[in-house]
Each structure stands twice: as C-alpha cells, then as structure tokens.
Length: 260
Ligand SMILES: Cc1cc2nc3c(=O)[nH]c(=O)nc-3n(C[C@H](O)[C@H](O)[C@H](O)COP(=O)(O)OP(=O)(O)OC[C@H]3O[C@@H](n4cnc5c(N)ncnc54)[C@H](O)[C@@H]3O)c2cc1C
Ligand code: FES
Image 1: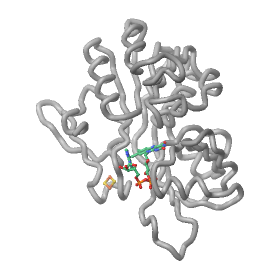
Image 2: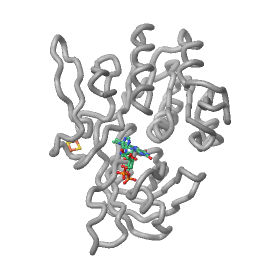
Image 3: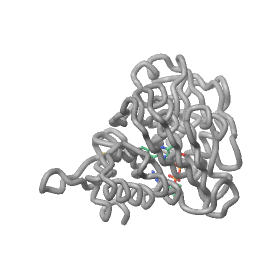
C-alpha cells in the first residue's frame, strides 16, 4: 500500500509520531494489528532490505498513526521522512486484541509498547469500559503522549525506573496494589514485563492478552523467524508471532522460550 505522510513529529530525543493518510489501510485495520513499513528513501538502494514492524497506534478518519523509537538504521531513516512524501507499507497484519465491553480493564504499557495500547484504550473507552493505564518507562523520555492518554483513560498511572516521571519503580507495582479492581488485563512492552503481568493475572484468575514485539523478518508467515511456543491443551505448539500473533493469551505463552 501507499500513503501520504501528514506529519512525522519528533516527540522527544527518542520518540516520533508518524501520521499517514491512506483510506484503504484505515478501512482494513483492526485494533492490535501492526504494519511492515519501508524505511528506505530511494528505490535504487536495497538497504535496509527488510521492512520494519510497527504497531498501529491510532486511526482517525482516513489517517493512521504510528509511534516509534529510533533504535537503529531503519527507524533513523524513518525519522528523516518528510511531510508530503509518499511512503509504502504492508496491509494491516497479524491478529487483534479482543476488546471487551463495559468491564473494568487494566492496560499496561512498557516503553514503546504504548503504540498498540493507545488505540486499545480508545476502543475500550468507546465500548463503555473503565480504562486504567499503567505506563512505565526507564526515564521521563520513555513516556510520551501523556496529555492525549489522559483524555482516553479513566486513570493514568505513570512509573519510571529512576523516578524522573511519575512513581519511581516498576509498572507492575501499582497494578498489583489495585488488582482486585479489574475484570480483564491487556499489556504490551518488554518480554520480562509481559511475563510478570501474565503471572500476576493468572494468579488472580484474570484473563490477560499480551502483544509480543518479537523480532520479525518477513512479517508474512514465511521465514519462521518469529516463532514462540504456547500451550494448547496438553501440548506445546509453535506459533508465528506475525501471523498467529502478535496478540496472545498471556496464560498460554511458554515464557521460558520467549524470555531467553
Ligand atoms: C509486532 C511488532 C510491533 C512493533 N511495534 C513497534 C512500535 O509501535 N514502535 C516501535 O518503536 N517499535 C516497535 N517494534 C519494534 C521495531 O520493529 C524495532 O525497533 C525496529 O524494527 C528496529 O529497526 P531498526 O532498523 O531501527 O533497528 P535495527 O538496526 O534492526 O536494530 C537496532 C536494535 O534494536 C533491536 N531490535 C530490533 N527489533 C526489535 C524488536 N522487535 N524487539 C526488540 N528489540 C529489537 C535490535 O536487537 C538492536 O539492538 C515492534 C516490533 C514488532 C515485532
Ligand atoms: S516474521 Fe517471518 S514468519 Fe514471522
């Protein structure tokens, strides 16, 4: 697919917000899905060869939003794309979150895990849910879009490892304190965080969905580069994160194979 860049805004030294106009993409996209985006500026170069996976952070009219952190060559090139340019990307990929209605929900996001959680929070709010978002980062630079998040959540609880924003500590700590308030849990972020959230939810008999940012090459189910293991009945089976994920039942993931 091809879309036009409406803005590629620097949010801070690490994070960018990219808004792209593409009616066809917006019509197909569902909450929790991701995109493989071309970061190359010219057709005559093949570097980087592979497109990069990014979660869909919002849909608004005929536009969609991505929020990304610059970590390497692909995301650095992406940050240099200019407003008005045409950029190419895949159709929306992967499975989706299962949004509930009129429930008390806890959402947990770690760092860049905020991207799919943003759209999920908005969706749950529109479905009459109470939406509490626990949003953790290493430092104040790792928590972005705070004012926008306040508008689409009932409670926003920010934590940072060094205390430079919100409460000092791990994002799971205030969540545990309030665990009895919830019916359903959703999370996206670093794997150890997703494991901890899933274990807490299971212990408290709460359903939990996690979105896994596994490394991906093709994004289409062909290369088998994104395999994780999940329990199915008495068996442990392989799943491709890009096709059968990125969203999984956190109680079924074999975390020892994910957090290697
Ligand atoms: C389904 C999915 C959704 C994602 N959504 C987002 C998003 O919304 N916003 C965002 O900023 N990032 C997201 N990511 C991660 C993003 O794809 C990588 O950061 C990006 O591909 C890095 O490309 P690069 O060329 O800049 O870095 P590279 O040069 O490829 O790598 C730079 C560094 O980043 C690490 N890295 C690369 N990919 C990943 C990954 N998937 N997980 C952890 N570390 C990685 C590498 O190990 C290396 O240390 C998502 C990944 C997946 C699989
Ligand atoms: S990234 Fe190739 S199979 Fe998933």
